[in-house]
Length: 419
Picture (cartoon, one colour):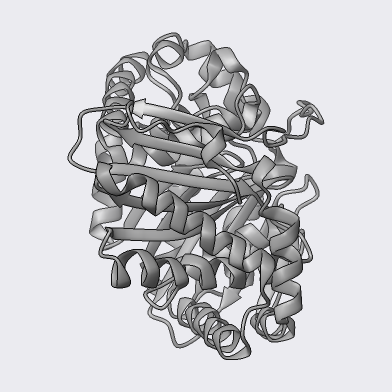
């Protein structure tokens, strides 16, 4: 029950009706994020996300929060490298009110100068909080260094220097140009009626326009392997070891998902079993995928003691090498397949997850893919497919290592990366 309406100016409204749900989650997405910023304005997309909750022509900041609370709902937003999303989750009977509230903050925010200065302090504190959180900071640093020197490598939050320099005119100019109608997707899932939502939002969004055109610049991971050390006094040593991966819409993406699940996607995964269960070298160890429109990364993460750091890196590389050298046994592949299919089906029970899926399908696939098609794609993956994808991506010359801790004396150099 997925229905899509495209307005004359390009704004898309896509809904999925799940009649038995009690909730509706509505999100207004813009397929334009940090990678579309000018370097001197890095962080402006995230700053705009904050400012849209600070008052409109009809509502003060306090009235916005009071209204969503009066519905017992959730109003929030998040920014990524390729999109920004503003969403509200409410009981189905409150959908019209929440849609009106979302549209108001999206279209009519006033960006008061005093609120900009107040929120600038908040964002600067958010940057400091990220930098003080090693578990967040190392992943952020991996992303920045993997795509260093490219817009995709810029941090979502920006830096203290760029955020401090953002003027009201620069913020407004970015929103007015980058929030193009053809990049706006309004996605709603749950007990929602498509025609009702279109009737509410189509008149409000029909007049949006923008002449801005993005530069057609691709992003590519580094051509040579490298090691980056973040020297910091810590109890643990944190490791991110990554290699090149696939773009979001790649035809081999389902084989990649299974590869990642087998490598480090759960308690039965190879990394978890070898590093935690058999050796006791880490509490947290897993692998994950970074997927963008034109590129990606496959990353292994572990937190361990300094004395075990080299051993953990060696085990991670050994398990990555096994995927290249050996075809995954059928029973292991079948277990990973059922794990992913189960997670996919369980995600259908949440209206916010369904809403996110609708929007990301529009952004990255330019179409809606049914759950049945997704499950069929998992069923079609063979051990040969996983080995072939592993051989394409897991190569010594593609490896990138980020290590955080007191590790200056460990001799971590590119010679240690020998997959």
